[in-house]
Amino acid sequence: MLSNPRLLQPVRVHYKNRAMPHHGKCGVVVIVGKGRPRNHGVQLEDGTRTVVPAGNLVPVKETPQALGTD
Image (cartoon, rainbow, N blue to C red):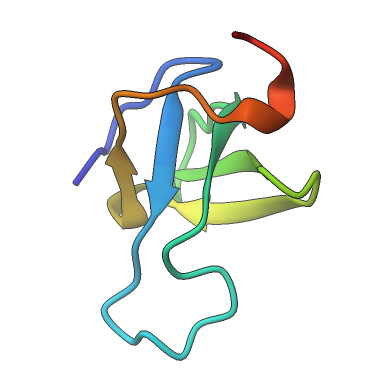
């Protein structure tokens, strides 16, 4: 799990409850939360931006294609 992500770092959203709406989706960190609670803004591959708690992010090696960073 990732608790201190960097800006534009590729991540995958992972929840313990697999019924959560964004579980398993990949994206990049666009907002890094500094206060409490530590929530971060993630732009998913489909263009949706969502807020994810810090403990629910997993780093990935490949960059999502939706951002055009090939």
